[in-house]
Length: 138
Image 1: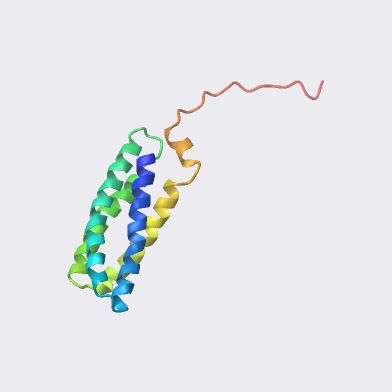
Image 2: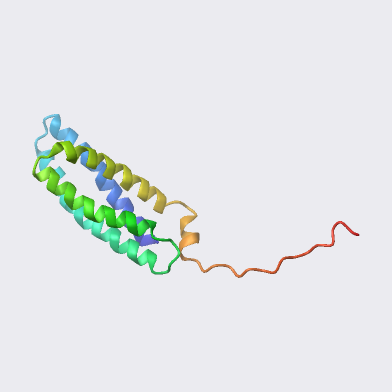
């Protein structure tokens, strides 16, 4: 679970940097466009790392398929986003970017929920037989 947390937080941080970088470009810092493109390339790598971490978290069989589905969607959509940006198809690139940032931040928050580790990697507790008290006395 720690790998999923680390990769999803790194991915979310880079995702949050993207609108900041492009905003700086729009304000006249033209070098920020190159940084925006470079971070987009790095995000393809982090999406792959998140996918690998989700597969590893799935192996124990305690998380369910949701993290794997989210990671797979991220793995497909990030390269698509990179292609849309490279072709300057902003009518799709911008809304998809907003969805990717929001989804990545949500997923990192989900992965870092304090109780998530207890439910994901610890062995289930043995159930104890029900204790029948004699209260109230008959």
